Image (tube, rainbow, N blue to C red; front, side):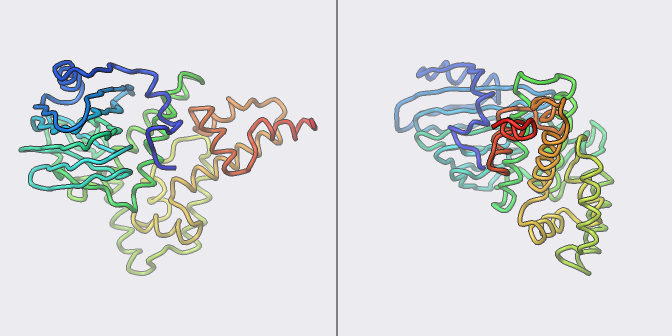
Length: 340
């Protein structure tokens, strides 16, 4: 489900409100400190600023609203990329000459080298991920001294929107204070790297990705010329791999490598055979495994089961579970125990 201002997935982020204000100077100082130094011009509407923040190991995530229409002119970013998803309203963003209209539900990736200007409509609220270039370089396998060569600004294609939503909501799940910290840390690191790889492979085609990812793309391009949508044998290999690593992190790179296809063909293949994206397929298979455990292992708890299969937020796990099976995990446990 796409993110919106009232999404339950955002509740861990809303717990940490950095500030609320209707004061222009205070608003500028807080936002500049967190994101980038900038010039802020107020236009139509009543100022009603709120900034929420959560920190992971490498990434910083924010929800930001100004209330009024504003024009923001930041300095070129120093060592980071910003990913803006419009939760409500919309924005026009000009990044090194590229103009993007980021309507509600759309996502833009910004890495300006010369100039950037953002015009937010009244009532707009944005979900923002701040991605350090150091993480991009680490995932790409390049040295810290090398340049990434990122595209200054690009609107994420609609076809990739559901994957981006799934990745970001999985990261938000990790922010939950419940659960085993060591398990959550392992999944956090995996999800952060997966997000960076997603941007490098899907949104930034001229950037250099890992050698493994390049090999996947090369093998996939050859496979694409033979079979555009993937064979049943490739799908079977993919499913077997998932089944063998149900309790371990799996990335898009892993899935594409196992199937021997490109990332593009991986998406086509999963949609053709299962009607969903690769990461949605992975989630559903893990939900099936969690259900089996709840039905067959008397000593297991719902929390331990959710964590074991990579669901860091118990409430989100229950929501996914109900959507999949039309019952809550506790209902499954009652059936196992023979309760009415």
